[in-house]
Length: 396
Ligand code: PMP
Image (cartoon, rainbow, N blue to C red):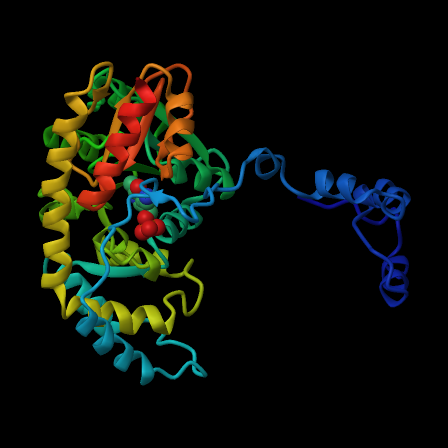
């Protein structure tokens, strides 16, 4: 296409640059030069920040000081003191003045092994799996391209679609939170999504989708399918073994729920051909040096992490039984380290719990599938006990 630009001469642009004036193609020139000097900052912000970003709310993390923190699916346990001492000795040897290894091969190998990545499949590391979702979207984004995922689901899929200028399509789950395969297949046929994200187990509902249904989604998808196994440690089921059987399947994991949320480290496993492309959207040195050595150290003490995970699973079952025994509470089965439950007045119950020092998550829905739902993370036995006592008093 020929650009009509000679309404203003090239000399005019050159002179403008020398005088440090803003020079723009003729189409933009008149409105901006007239307005720019007198624009209020708020007008500049509404002019320059994309409307999609202005419409977003930043990811909100509520203050939790002095509260029992059961809102973010963290592992509540610390390490034994001897292990902490050993770790600190390792940290002493770290060179903070140097950039980290940009692509830590040893960590990739040990994490890949720990996560059961099959031979022949590659590994990409992210600053949390959030960053991996973003890398995938950055590589796929084009106007009209779609991220598709069942809803209710993990909020970052939608946020990242918006940030990267992709379209977002949420397909409602069935009433029991299972995958509505017919609706999924119809949406896939209609939208031809660049990527489908399936959280397995799903957040915030906690259930595992049917394996056959997921396989059907993988087969029907023209683009990628990412099975997000953030809660794998508590689920005892995985699609890792399916890698290599489908050329459009990727599996994502994180160390966050294994007791290492502070490290910010996620893993994407799949065919090298895809990962090589996503790697191009990765910022250099995305895994900091403290994370690299701490993760390697933690993996050599895997038994401690696994024991904590087993404890959380045992406590989840007890918490579920206790919740189900309460009148007026509907708790949904969970294969993750949290439980979604419905109460008659969610906002009031949430506030009453906080008043008593317990922070959980209010799903904030008046209507729809998450209406009057709250989500509690499984904590220590003492924390779960404190939560239940506060809940009993809140619903009285
Ligand atoms: N996927 C799902 C389904 C999640 O619930 C979360 C975090 N809550 C993540 C991914 C991101 O985990 P992280 O960035 O801590 O690795």
